[in-house]
Amino acid sequence: IEADGWPRLGDTRGKVMFAMINGAPYRDRYLELHPNLAEGILFTTGDPGADGADDVVVASIDDPVAEGDRIAQLVRDGYLVRTRSDTPGVEAPAGDTARLEAALASGAHWVSTDHPGPEGAAGQYDSDYVAELPGFLAARCNPIVAVGCEDSGVEPTVR
Image (cartoon, rainbow, N blue to C red; front, side):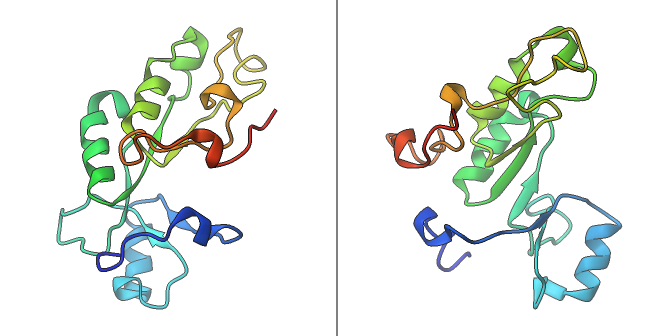
């Protein structure tokens, strides 16, 4: 990946990528079995550049409000990043979308939620909170590294 970069979207269609978002001890055990991910079937997540973790290409950063700038920089540096749009029992009951908006603006490639559309949090809380991409998109252009890209060229809308 350092030499050639990530594959282009069109080259990945019909393929699956696995990433373990668990940290130690699961990551450590996986790396014992697959040093430098050799012959492994998934990427591990970690803190890029920390603790000599030169195998890390996927970062998991849960708080896009506090760490939005860091997420954006990791995206610019070529890492794939996962973040969260909400925390259990916090944003959804309050209908607070600030964290979702920060997650989407950060450029993170995966945004995890406990409240995906179309029902969102309505069944669990008396709230209209839904974590989804604007415009009913299934995917979109990355706002950090694909400026000027048209969302309609990535995937059709889901509704």
